[in-house]
Amino acid sequence: MISTSDFHNGLVFEDDGQIWEILTYQHHRKSQSAAVYRTTLRSLATGSVCEKSYASGTKFREVPVTKREKQYIYAEGDKAVFMDMETYEQVSFPKEKLGPQARFLRENMQVLGVYVDEKLTNIELPANVVLTVVSTVPGVKGDSVANMVKPATLDTGLEINVPLFIKEGEKISVDTRSGQYIGRAKDEE
Image 1 (cartoon, rainbow, N blue to C red):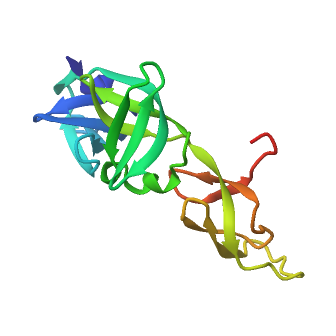
Image 2 (cartoon, rainbow, N blue to C red):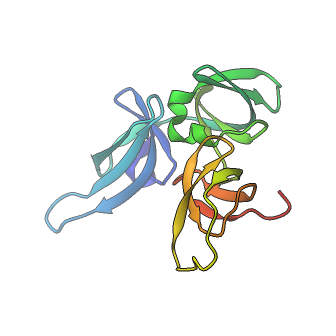
């Protein structure tokens, strides 16, 4: 059993029969009242995010979480197929549960499979990925005003805004959490 005093970002616990992951938490104490923990939680079953408050000292069942390396192989309809890097077993995972992160999947991409009570419940992508710009409008010489952006389509079909100096065929880094341009990719990739 764990208590609210054990809360930390990323902790997985069971409350009212649901499995939750703590995204953020804050400890609040007003002068004449009991302490309260305000949390932002993600349901590992549905992926939905909500906010809940718990009285200090509330106890929960800690849920064992393991992470295993997987490799994205291909898309099969509305499912993504991953291969376990230890057992070479293939497993299908609904793209719907991946949410917007499904837009970043590329063949042979290394990801982490999150297992809760030995059941695959989530896929974690790397913080950023390298993608290739397949189409964008050309930048005009002299367009050097800071923070000017233009739309670009990437090799996964994702559309994002990039700086004016980015050309078709360039490899760029994209943040998988926000979907925003980070910078040009290093030559090693």
